[in-house]
Image (cartoon, rainbow over all chains, first blue to last red; front, side, top):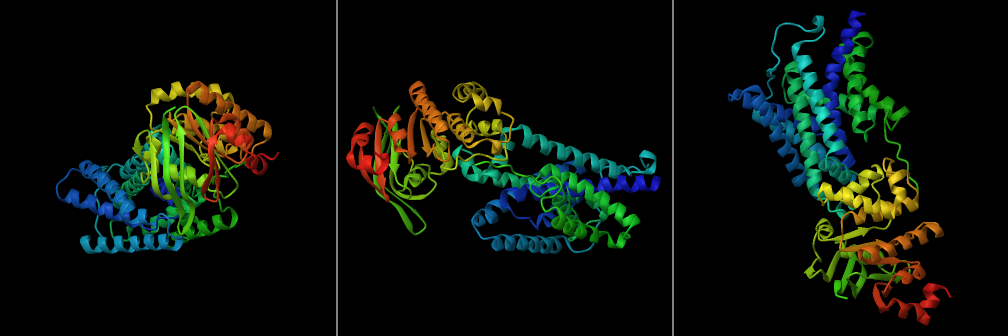
Length: 290
Length: 236
C-alpha cells in the first residue's frame, strides 16, 4: 500500500513535467494544427543554455530566469523566421519543417555542448527526504515550480486581454485581424511561451534524468500521449492528461510491464486514445449551429 | 455629406482569377450605402478589398488617407469594422469574450461603457453573455457580430449580407436595429445585400455590381424605381 502511494506520488511528479510539455504542444497545435516535434529538442537546448550560464558563474535562479527569457526569444524567432512563411503551406511542408527543426536542434546541441551525459544542479538541494521519504526535496520543489508555471499560464490566458487575443488569434485569425489584433505578433508570442514552458520542464527534469542531447525524446512521447489523452485541442485537458500519463507510466512500470518497457506505455496510450476516443477525454466537442 | 470612403479604379483578384475590374464608389459620412448584385458579382470581394483581405490595385481613400495595401489589422485600427460573411464568430469563446475582442484596440474602461450601448440594441446578448458563442442561433450570432463591430467604435461599418441564413422576422429585426444605429450614432454603413428590398429601404446611396463592374450608381430611391433593377433584383 505504501509502495503504491509512493508510485502514484512520483508519477505525479514526472507527470508535472509531461503536463508542461503537453501544454506547450497544445499551444502550438491550436495555432498551427500540427504537433511541434521539435518541442522536446528545443527544451533540451534551453536546458544546456541554463547549464552554460550556471557554469559561467550565474546563481541558479539568475540562470533560470535568463534561460526563460532566452527560450522565449528563441521560440518567437523560430515562429517569425521559419513558421510565418509556412502559414499557408500544405501539411507535409509544415511537418517537414518540424522534423527539420528537431534534427537541427538535436545536432546543434550535441555539436556545441557534446554528447556526453552531464549532471544538472537542482536548486532544492537538501539531503533530508520529505513527507516520510516519499518525495525528495527536488521532486517537491520541481512540482511546486511546475504548478506555479501552469497556474500562471492559466491566469494569463483566462484573465488578461493579451491572453484572450492570443487565444482568438489561434482559433480564428481572420476575425482576429478584423478586430485589430496583430495575429503575427500573437503567434510569435505563443511560440515564445511554448518554448518557455519546455525550458522550465527541461530544467526541472534534468537533475533527475541527467542532461544529454536526447534527454527530452522520451519525455516528448509521454507528453504527446498526455496531450492526446486529455484532448489535443484542450489546454486544461492536456495538463490533466500529462499528470495522468505520469501516474500510468509509474504504476504500469512498477506492477505491469516493468521499468524497461515503460516507454511502450506511452505508445500504448497513444494508440488506445486514437482507437477508442480520438478527441481525448476532454476534447472539445464544438457545438455549432448555423 | 462629406465622403468618408472612396474607391477609384479598384481591381481585386484571388490568385489568377480577377473579380473586380476597376470599380469606383463612395460612402458618405453618416449615411447608409448599399451594394447590390447577384451571387458572384463581387460584393463580398469589394468589402474584403476595403479591409485589405485580398490583393488589390487602384486606390482606396478613407477619412483622407490611402488605405489600400495596408494590413487588415491596421485598417481595423483606422476605424473600419467589418462584419464578414459567415459572421466571423469566435465559436470556441464565450459571448462576453467575443465582445471583449471587439473592443481589443480600446481601453478597458471604454469597453464597459460601450457594452451598455450594445446591450441597448441587442438585449438578448446580455442574457447569453456567458454562453459559448458557437451555441447561439444564426440571428444571435449576427447580432453578436454587429455588437462586436460596434465595440471597435468604428467610423465605418461594413456589413456582408446581414440577412444571410436568417428567418424573415429576424432579418427585419436586424435591419431595424441597423437603421437605428445609423440614425442614433450617425454611424456610416456600407452594406452588401442580396435582399435588395431591405437594403434599399435603409440606404441613401446604392450601387449595382455585375460580374465585377459597377453598372449603376445613384440614390437608393433611383435604383428602387429603376425598371431593370426592379425586375432583376426586387422581384416585382
